[in-house]
Length: 85
Image (cartoon, rainbow, N blue to C red; front, side, top):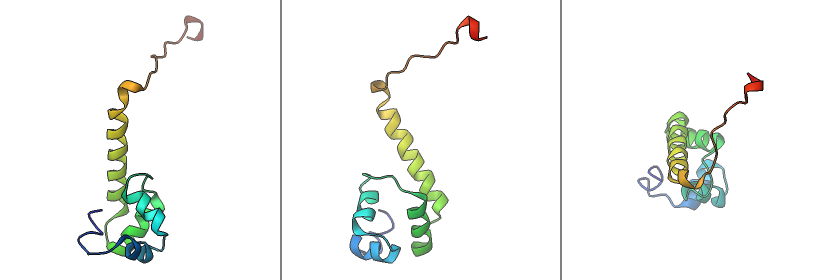
């Protein structure tokens, strides 16, 4: 993560500073779990990066991942029946 590495922190040290477990922080850092608002707020309080910025970054990442998988998501366009109108 762009915040932890420049500070020279190990994941264990950063997790302690954030008040979370090492596995919880590791999952967020490795993108195996989404960044939660709670974790974003903890990062804001500990390191000064606004949670709004972090959550916008998370949303942008999730949108990009969904677009990457778009061809595998099969859904037909909904067309209302004439009787429903």
